[in-house]
Image: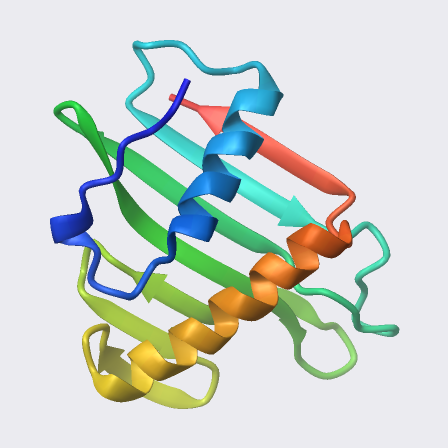
Length: 143
């Protein structure tokens, strides 16, 4: 099993390393079938909490478009709020709408230079965390 990504629809500089990592995670999940139309991958660290902090949960959704795959969104969550913190979108790269949103910052076009620069740094950090094994709960959901 190997997802082929539609590189012409990559609005951000998504690396081959991230594509390979997602292919590996999906393959290892044992959930792959040729009929799948979308995949959601959740990366979590079970020790992450509002009190102690830690590595943010990340969710990535991929959608089949004919015989190739496109990114729908990549979302990084964080706890926010006073005495009753909630898990909220901290960073959201929404490929479908062509926007990126960050906590306390107005929505930006996903193709802006600021978003591209931030995305490259975010992805590099995320891949380092995956390689370090900090995400002890990785869940693959298929549709």
